Length: 67
Image (cartoon, rainbow, N blue to C red):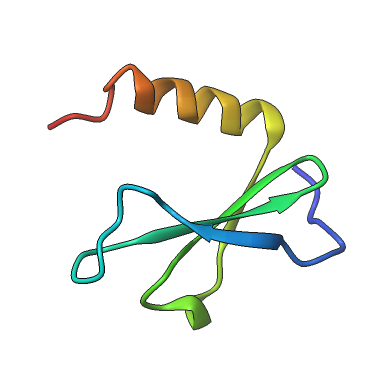
């Protein structure tokens, strides 16, 4: 995947997060998304393209990461 030339925009906190727990935020790129830890924003973020993001969301909805 190519490195985006612009920073992510429109960061929003997960609706599943609560104030005292681990949280993530999602930002947008023209061709995908960026994800970061709300409690350590200085650590940076990772990016994914639109196709990868859609597959990841589908896996979450299918509960494929349940332990």
